Length: 314
Ligand SMILES: [Zn+2]
Image 1 (cartoon, rainbow, N blue to C red):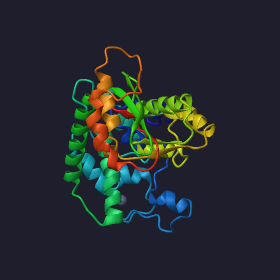
Image 2 (image 1 turned 45 degrees about the vertical axis):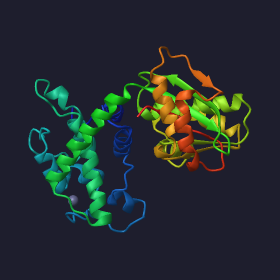
Image 3 (image 1 turned 135 degrees about the vertical axis):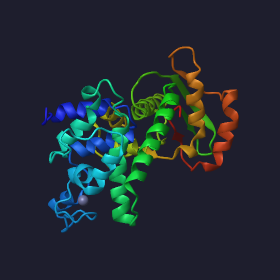
Image 4 (image 1 turned 120 degrees about the vertical axis):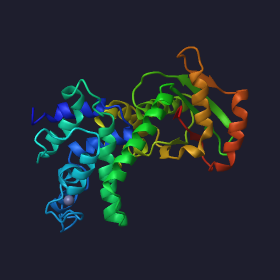
């Protein structure tokens, strides 16, 4: 089983019960696309390929996540099963495969499979904090933080099973022009839902004949993928292609990132959408009473653009 296929590993990553930030991170891992020192040296961005923690030559992703003494200590302190012979493999794929298939191998025990992605993420994050900010967190703290992150995410994702999407379009004074709400269920990750809502908002604006529209999304990764600043995740390709196609035929349409705080209206609409009895999309041209307070509160934060904010219930 030692050398899994890249496909099998990728599929396993997408199936993990974890946040889209973590899916993205793991996807970069298997594609060797994280800026580990060895990778940076290989493309001549840096001359020094050493690990800054243990001075070992050739700091690969595998070194950071599994072989560095710091990583080994984190794994050892975690409740996750150690490799059978106690030795981490020198293959990143083998190591990833091992920690991601614990449930298959130890079906009778609690395998802590949900914790694994968060441990990997935390080890990588601590490596960056160490490197760029001189912060050195104890290995036990890394384990505790990963447990906390996992719990927090699991609680939040329970909430998000109740999915709805909403968007609102406003004129330059902040007055509502149109709003859309729709109940959604089981679409997939929050980022997919976000992309679907955005595409719906874009299509609606095209249909209503608006020429200049600025679309705001609270997903930074989504905005980057649409604007070609980040490689599109394979799973999102079809929907992102639809979006970029719509944008290319409407050249005064823009998609930008905007933090969720700035668009409470879309949030409120998405919440309302979840209370709908069916999945029929609803469009509003007159502001519904439940929206009046939020839309007024949102006004001062608006720039001089139309904006459409799709959103998931969060
Ligand atoms: Zn090291």
